Image 1 (cartoon, rainbow, N blue to C red):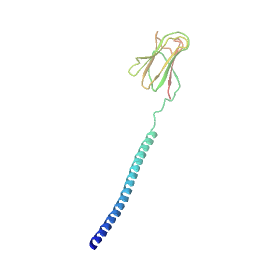
Image 2 (image 1 turned 180 degrees about the vertical axis):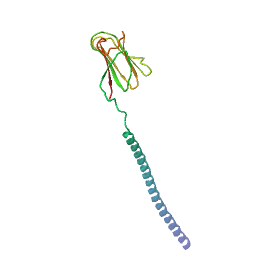
Image 3 (image 1 turned 60 degrees about the vertical axis):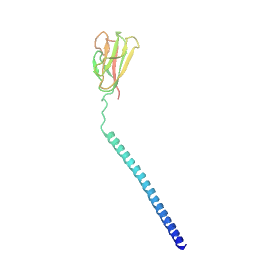
Image 4 (image 1 turned 90 degrees about the vertical axis):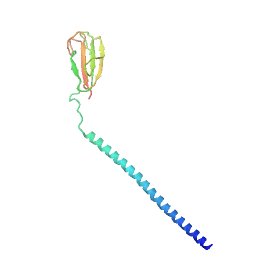
Length: 160
């Protein structure tokens, strides 16, 4: 019975040693997992830093400058223009000859009718024209007056 008791004690000591070893391994594994989480967090931070640096470089690049003169410009009727920048074309009746005027826009050619005015008092039309788009304000009876004889004023205002 003494041998059995010694054997039991030895087995209990071996189990305790194994349990202590398991606890040590569990602690090491917890540290490793926390380290792995930290590595993942550092990796994400590095990715974010690279993205921020790329954005900073993009912001430092020279930008396309708006037109030097972003003031409204009078334009003639019955002439096709290409917008050098995005802007607004407006037509309004200011007095004089009452003519119908139509406003056309398009990228290939100014074929889409976007506005029309009758030449009556307080008549007005206008539209936004995108950069590169062609536009034309056409007087029904011909002529290419900016103002004066047509009774209509045409203004292009660049967006700056």
